[in-house]
Image (cartoon, rainbow over all chains, first blue to last red; front, side):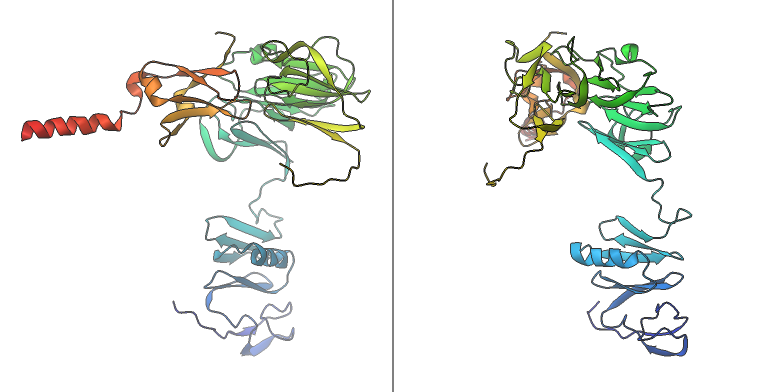
Length: 330
Length: 84
């Protein structure tokens, strides 16, 4: 269709300015609307707002803005092209040309299709899992080891993990499994999904309850760490590189699990590292296999440590120091 | 399982790169385990990571590997010769 500038005339209810006029009066004679000025593809109307889609994929909004103007402004910033519009009483649906749908506005009866709010998200090598505010657990990605529940298969869009008998508070993911924890204070419940091929006896060794409770939980690709309120660190699963907590650890404040190693911040503020350290990610020394096994290294940084994080043979220590950065190196 | 074998991975879980003619799978060091399809056809089953000491054993059946493209071409050529 050749591009031209349409002129739109509107009449009727206008108490919220939904006709796009220069006033808020109801009218019975058509007047020129500010929705004019582009090639109109579609107009959709909600209870008190009007959405107009132009042939070039832009959206205009008139009337009760609610949350809607936010997203129209957002669209113009990211330049996402809209293919089609629809509206409920007080919400707008924008089908993008990419096949995704943006929703905005009010959804007191599910109008936005967003389900419960997501309260927690985690990922491992090839799957991601979320905890919803209603305690359900949903995941997607590679589920061939049962890490996304049954049936064990690749899951292309989010799917609820079935068979959970309690309300989830937190979830952690290993490479081939998902471990769900219930409310930390009341139940201490734990549930495992996957791995079907359980080489490191996670199902056998992981307790079904963590009582008197956990402060934090973490997973490497094959091990599960449970930090208790009193600073004791429990570990289950893979230990061939010394991934599990070594004996006689001091009280721990926080933990971070990498792919096959673990960092701990002690209550005394020291950083400890152990496990597979072939790339230097557990500090020095390591044994001839590159492991820090059955013991730990203390890793020193010249500032007060605030937090620890870990990745695939990477370790990161956050300090509260304020240092001028030159930036841009490497 | 030998200590230096990090994992046993079914070939269905590996990614095939048709350009490099290799199967690969993520290594916990951040690089990836790799093995060429020709090595698999020869019965080799250990995929190695170029950046660290870890290795995986690939679980597969030689008969179920994709057939080499050259194979069918040779077959066609031979058939054509006979037909000529």
